[in-house]
Length: 306
Image (cartoon, rainbow, N blue to C red; front, side, top):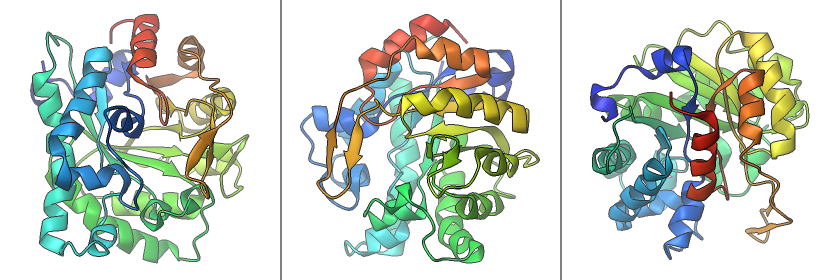
């Protein structure tokens, strides 16, 4: 059963735990695709859309209930730098949702609900210089809202089940995103990139999570693209501060060198952590960069059905 006939994601979170996918980029790279440019996986929306479908499908077949789209770095500004006009850019941004939806339709033997989360990366992702892990771009909340709103409108019109406002590095951008999603008619989750008990920009997580506590559009709050060791306290804090379901999908634990554009160190993500995060209040659980289908299968088995 695909999300086109499934119950809403918010209802599913009230009933149990939902499994997210893992890192889309590592799955595309495993298939032999070069993502070494400023558009990252968004480049394949135009050049290799079938590859994106297959990457999503690998996660659905591994046991994921939710596919996060290839739209993280899909922006009007980013496409414009590649000579792609606004109309075509809007088509490509919207296609990120349809490609994930197509993967859900193809998922063999899927009798469970499957959902599509439209990825909305931070402003720094468009810059492609690692600044999404620092935040504080020198822009006002209003300027950030004006950057995000047009893309969010296109994504909302494409019909995802939820908008994934992800890898948010600071509270200014969170405020802008929360303003930008108002009135779109699509629920959202808000997840920060964190280091220890603070956002990447250094604000306390209590302050960061509190911004979403009363946002009706937001059905889950949490963290992603962080080290697994930082997830425990963040999940507990998000649940306590907001009273909402918590979303958590850390990286493998390896470190990203933005200058060298390479990973280093060792993986520390363990599937058994998922049951601990659930005990702390997490209801959307998966992995981010360098977490593959095999790990998602283990998470799905440990958490059981929705």
